Image (cartoon, rainbow, N blue to C red; front, side):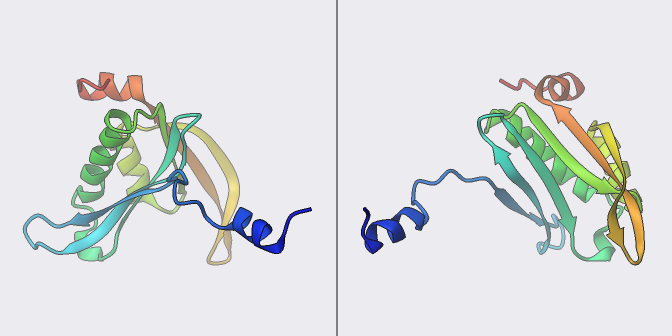
Length: 145
């Protein structure tokens, strides 16, 4: 049998735990202020994939290509520095700007989960997009290792 101290230690977070998220703040180049963030979440190191999430907080910065630029930098980082194989994201139907951003980034729609998300009293579709490292290389002519 284990002591209480041994059991408690078992459940304590380990210092060497593997990170499953990577976050970067988005700064506006001219205004020099924080306007959002781009994040890789749920990184699966064994499968070498992750979810990407981008948010621009203030509406005055929406529709200016900032999220696309941040997404491109993060995807490049994921493939070049983290050696991931696939980046994916989920976008619900009313979010037209994000759907357009996914297309601009070269993400391919893999699935539509119909009426999966409940927003403002209505069930909406959830679109699943992804891009693979090899496809990203071909799209961007980068020398991704």
